[in-house]
Length: 237
Image (cartoon, rainbow, N blue to C red; front, side):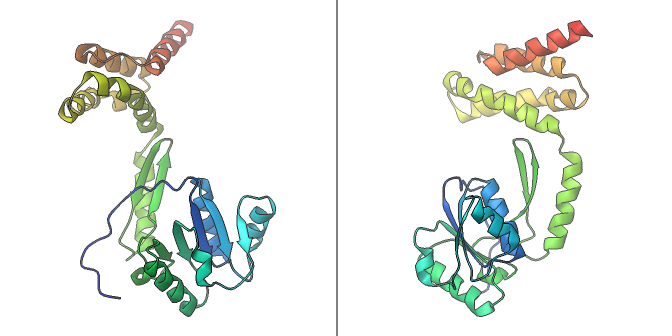
């Protein structure tokens, strides 16, 4: 394999409903399978022997298992392939076969055989942060992940979800990307994330509503509902 000249290109990939093949049946493969299932993939595991976790998921119908040694026909229909067997020769063969068929492949802990690497992921509701060290130090990536987790609270997801409900109307009213960028940047500049973090949700929602009115963007039904909830909550208190 030639030496890489450039870093990996970060990308968020939709794997829901796509076929993912995992070659190997040990604990590492079980972790990879669990992650792929969590993001909606159709997972097939190919291995002569499988871990108890994979056996349980197969029995419940969450994934498919082929109890056999790998051969290139197993790649048929696969959108993504992950290899983590205890045999470097098999892993190398999987990588070569995938490249010939232009199927993205990850060989766990063998960066030079990978066409993609899996980042450390921080999730908070609808917010996802991915951290990568380019395969050089997974331990450092995990440390960065834990550091980020301390700073990304639920307020980000709450504001993200609300702003998402405004996008369809903003696209209709504001004609250009520049206009929409100015609108959403202006909302965040009002400090709405900080308001929610401080427990001042009503103030944050009202600030978003004012920004909508000033820009001529209709207030979404979700924003209106949240504002009413905060008013009722204030009255009860």
